[in-house]
Image (cartoon, rainbow, N blue to C red; front, side, top):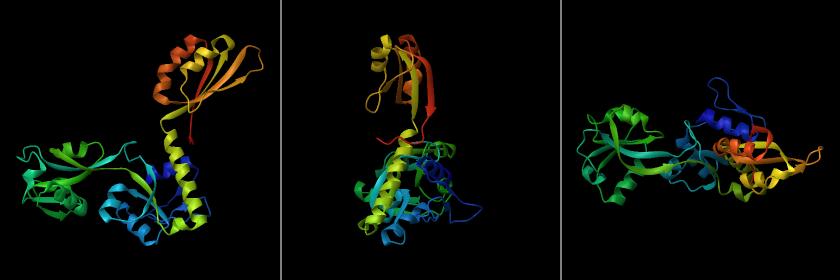
Length: 278
């Protein structure tokens, strides 16, 4: 997630870089100091006030039972803009069809607390052991099932595993220490970062659009264009022509282009966006 996070911060207006194996990144904002640590640990340090704020997954907040303030929900990942899932999985040829079939069985996972809580909610008693990694290869020789993180499911399929159930959908959360939010300056800075990060994510699926429109076509073209409010319309130096500008969903715009041309738009320009702040 490091590179995806650096890219998100760059679009939000913060340049973060780390050389070699350094865990202290450089940030082009003198008001910020950063450290790179594993997502599994971040919520604990934020809860304890060692860190004022951090980025980690909802899964690790729940696993650690951390009492922190969730400032923003940021849906992005290593392979796209979607949640990740913690799933219960077994070999394709396993007789296990539901979690009830795991009564008295062994389960390996990195999220022991999440798994125990899930089993308790289902009324199932099973042995849950911590896995240090390579969890997929432990079934069926070492354990009967695993609880593993997946984004696309490709790794599970590659290991001939099938999903029995989903324990949790998780997204990245921007979290803050609750005492830090009582400090006026820190609260303002944390909220600024959250606003810019959310704006950068909002821009990922959108594009800016400009076009020239004759007076006779203005109403028809304006009706075609969804916008955050309404399209921006301004007169051109040539009588009877207007410049129309708006922000659109990128996928919607590709289907609109022929309709805009047919309605009379000219000089249509599409440009990328870094941030969209509603």
